[in-house]
Length: 195
Image 1 (cartoon, one colour):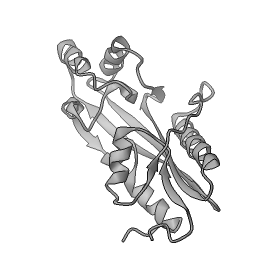
Image 2: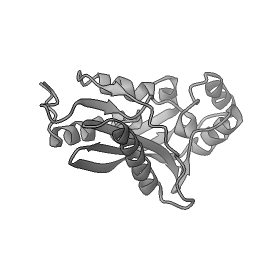
Image 3: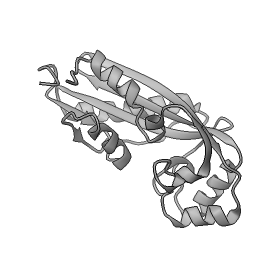
Image 4: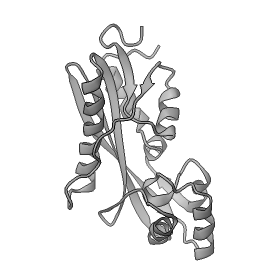
């Protein structure tokens, strides 16, 4: 019904719990599939280009495994002074990332790609976040929550990490990992009906 016979299935090329929650909110049936791709881009690639490349790489990888499906892929990086902060591998790195962000503003850059038979569009959304000045004790306390795990920039804005920010400018869903206003527009352009 929603896919109008154009596609056999709607797929989210991600197993991220935050992205799944956002997609579930649309009320459309979909399948979440791990993209299983190399997430390395050449050193020096601008952040905007990197997330666009990775979002498309993920969407295409899943589309290649599922014929006649419409696939949504996404990738996200935190950008501080034009340099990407990825997912910290350990608590020490998470603390260092958060300390570098404390009292400053930075950007969350999210790429989204929708691909299906005869359709391929990639876009990038940028949000600006202003982190409160934070003491080392506060930073250690936040790192101890474990929310930093698997998160670029070492925080989860939809969790206890909300308390880190003085101001957020931009699409909150994009900050959470999937810019839903863009996703809805792209899905509509691809022929998906929502009601």
